[in-house]
Image 1 (cartoon, one colour):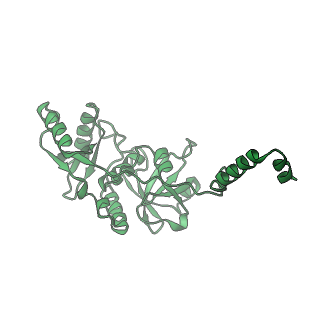
Image 2 (cartoon, helix red, strand yellow):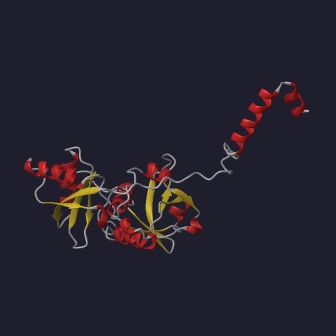
Image 3 (cartoon, helix red, strand yellow):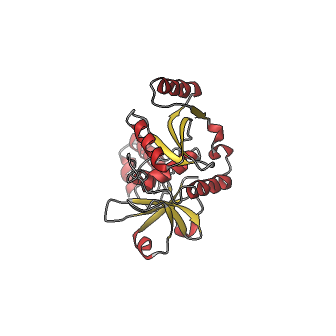
Length: 254
């Protein structure tokens, strides 16, 4: 009946109907969340970064980080392989741009000696997922025992949970967003049984938003995270009653 009604309305209507059906053929399942899997956006690679400072105490690195932030620089500190806390900031597409910025900051007395980190130095540059996952876990392990410092200017303020995950990924060459909700949205959802080292695990605590806490999965059902103010960065289990109750999901970025 439908075809006869279209035929009665002339060839122009038939042609329009055919075009609409053809267009919809490529959209099958749209509008149904269980029909089409969302496409994951790959994280951007880090460019040239400025590294400055070398401190024996995390608190001094925090103060230096805060000093850079007052200059409008998105700085973060980390524990290097030599055991010292160092600070990195910036993300420049051209090395000379990073160098000129560092020279200007040194002239202004904001920094002293500096080092330009090139993209080839990052683990992500090797294009080896297994190597990158191991590097992510090792970087996270280097933070174990570091005080939970909420991004501030004293020993009582500094790293928060998403700041830790962002720093670990950026130190390996992947520009992970800053906040846990944005990190959750940027990744590809994976089942708990498919978790691999380096994936991020998310939790909803204290009823705040969709997600409000994040950690880095390290295998064997365990993850590294910055738990709460006053506590040090450490390892916990997904099977722990508290985290099992508040678990939201896991995301992959590789």
